[in-house]
Length: 412
Image 1 (cartoon, helix red, strand yellow):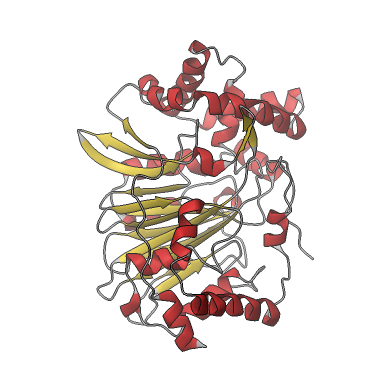
Image 2 (tube, rainbow, N blue to C red):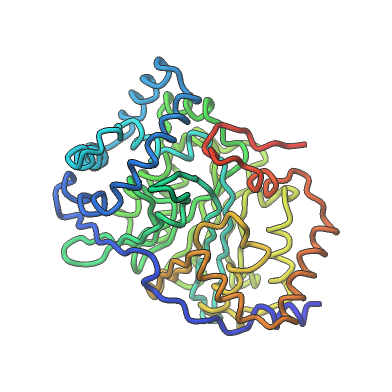
């Protein structure tokens, strides 16, 4: 089986256009009020179409008193620069007649994780023989809304942003309309970042942590990435930051074997049982790290992480290149029915590619029928050998259209 796994993982990928998703530039030298105008105008109809559903979800989470209190504390966590950017998005929409969009909805989008939005994600960090780290990320999520009679979802509004400063590209991120923080981003020549859900994420506990000084991750990580050029300094700063919600951060650096997985606890205090920072180590042949949505030092909640590691363990890092990581991310066990996009980056080279689900289908179609049969067998074997203790995947697949509703990921 291991030899067949090698064959499966080393096939040559089909060509994928690097311009498949919309591309935008954001100039950080402009006043904050002007940076996102062109992006907002491009997505204005989509944002307006999302607004009613966002309003419904907020009404389910908050009454008027708690919503006002939440807005007060969220506003206090924002820098003047970020607050001005978010206000400018609302102002631009209102100037276009989209007055149904309110500032509270824009804030909601930028703190969507801390409001207990259930997601599934997976990340792979893999080092080439020379130590160059390639970072693969699958974003798994859904948010259905209607526009002009068409049902849309996150893949329909996924886009890339390149941030510029002093006429030089500084960072790149994968974004959704009206969201200016980072869940998926890279600083050129520096480090990459991915955020994954941790199952102890809970709205009201996060709210209490925010009242005590905790911050949301997306805008905070953007600030850290803007001001912190290298991986080690970024990792140190992140470990010292008081985040209001538990989560996982997956990071790669530009130097050989720079890679880490951080298990974040709510309130900036490390809890008993939380995994220590996971690092690559060339001396111990730790050339790959996989993170999904459970703690590394505990029994997995679904088959994705153990299945991925089972495929990787018999290999040597001589197989690792951009194609290898891309191919690994667009098939089982890490790719699933809720995958919004696949993202492949290398901070050492500045390479970055965002792949939508319809493109991953063309990549997978290049696998021979025998290879696909072996992939299916591998998935069935893992499901048989390790039944789900808590079925995160089933939870996500069965999520209703209003998938932003508060729901605790269940444990048996």
